[in-house]
Amino acid sequence: MKRLIIAAALAGAVLAPFSALAAKDSVTFAQRLEPPGLDPRTGAAAAISLTTLYNIYEGLTRVDEKGMVHPNLAESWTISDDGLTYTFKLVEGVKFHDGADFDSSDVKYTFEANAAEESQNKRKDRFTNMESIETPDANTVVIKLKERRPALLEQLSESTAVIVDPASDATNATNPVGTGPYKIESWTKGDSLKLTAADTYRDKDAIAIKNVTIRFIGDGTARLAALLSGDVDVSDIPNELVGSDSLKEDFDILVGNTNGETILSTNNANEALSKLKVRQAIAHAINRKEIIDGAMFGFGTPIGSHFAPHHPDYVDLTGTYSYDPELSKKLLAEAGYPDGLELSLKLPPVDDYARKGGQIVASQLEKAGFKIKIENVDWPKWLDEVYKKKNYDLSIVSHVEPMDIGIYARENYYFNYNNPKFNEVVAAAESAASAAERTELLQTAQKMLADDAVNGFMFQLPRVVVVRKGLNGVWKDMPFFVTDVARMSWSD
View 1 (cartoon, rainbow, N blue to C red):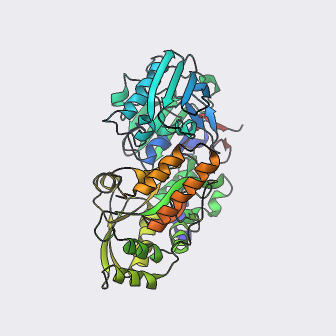
View 2 (cartoon, one colour):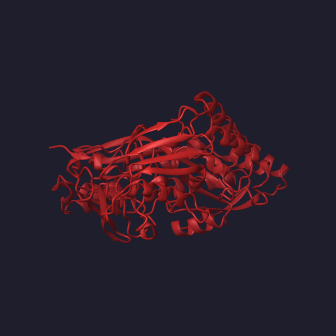
View 3 (tube, rainbow, N blue to C red):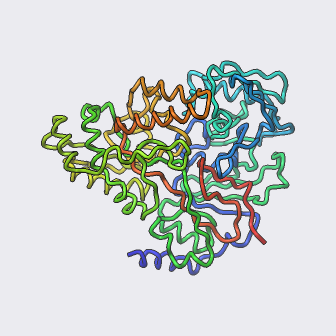
């Protein structure tokens, strides 16, 4: 079957024009999901950040492929001895795409809007922790925090902290205006997004790639065909096709890490799922290796809690609940379900970890005494029913935000997990006075989630991407979901 799939892709590529090879100032990416909007401060989908962060929008700081923090709209900063006051010196001469000047008032506006009662920013708590934002002059911002946040500089490089122009804020979802190296040229819904180098960008002469096309191709075999035909330069493809001989001559295969924890999301407010023994039964039913091999063709790292294995504070908790379907049946019976338990499993439109993984997980749960009804949904329905309305039992999704263990402390988050003691530990970790204290608290938080079996913790999402030879600067590791085109270039 694998050979037939590859052969079909090659057949479709033979007569296709090698358009992507002609222009060395252009690049075309294939992206499996289309963003539902283009405002990364208000949208939860990773596709928004992947498309817009560091391209259209910028923050005060940015991170590189290794997660190291660098200046961006802020050229420098100082931190008070007590860790509560950050003073940023802004880059001068920056303009928004609409020609408006960028200054400290835009930072103040953006962060206060992020903290406002009506804000939809998914990291709102980071901005409500700002006691005051002062702008002594156009190029200086002084932020005073209520509580220490040692990770603030890194957090300000994320998509939720990009700076916007107040005049265009209301329409950014459809007509984004930022300070980044690229501005939107066109958005053909269901097909592609085109960006072009912004004349307003402060360092436009240093940008080697002038034109960017992001094509939305949901089918993995079609993405492979687009690579082979020359229509696309960079894409992920189904993991089972990565070893194709057809890719070896013209492409490099990059295999790295992401911050995506792939989990069996569990509605802890469901009457049955609110019982620890039922959640423990689910945990004992999960065979991570089988899921990684079957859905991801061996790519992925098992996890036992909501934390990235490449992070220095990671604790391996995969042994908390060993694979034991017979013990699952026993726990179900003890919880009051001797004849099994019926649950729905809503799966978003991701072929590998969600749809393929979902079939494997359903089979594993059924062997352990559960009765699983699979429902495949599109992203808008998943976001509405699962994420917003919490109308679900189980789902499968990768949570791709960096260092997002704090989502378990959010009120009314879609897991419906409520543990005041956990909330205290996370809050203490966020404001820890030392790295050692922070490590201890984060490791405690990981263990609490594992012990509570809040979700089915499966594996860390890998970064596997195919890149046309000659294109430099594509990230192998992805600490954030970013396509940092401005730092890419073609070799002569």
